Image (cartoon, rainbow, N blue to C red; front, side, top):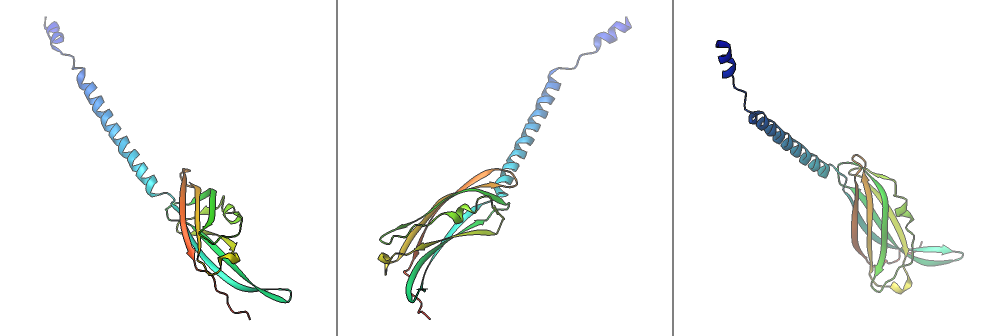
Length: 184
């Protein structure tokens, strides 16, 4: 009789306690994963390349000799500086770029070779690459300011994470008409 009484008095533990502890552990695990994921996203946003484009223009006039005569050559130089302001290097994948004149002063045609040569190059943080273009200034522009717009898109990839980015740029430049330097 004594044996039956001991066996009969042992209770089984409640089943909801282990289930509750498991659910609590699952919740803590999920919250830890979420915090780590948010930290990774913030880290990616902070430690990424940030490629920008700065455009400057300069107009020059110089005397050139051809045969026995001299003639005046006026040229507009448009220089675009591609800078990486971020914390990781970037590789330039593609450059869509165009420099157009507006107003009464039209410029001659020029190729985009300088910008296409930047494709595949690495832009290191805090350093820059330069691409320049020279436009002949037509005689119809005499005495007028020269207005140009540099527009385009640079497609680049973060070399660390492999994430692609793009930067759209639009920059207007106004340059005074060049006055010739006296010939020597």
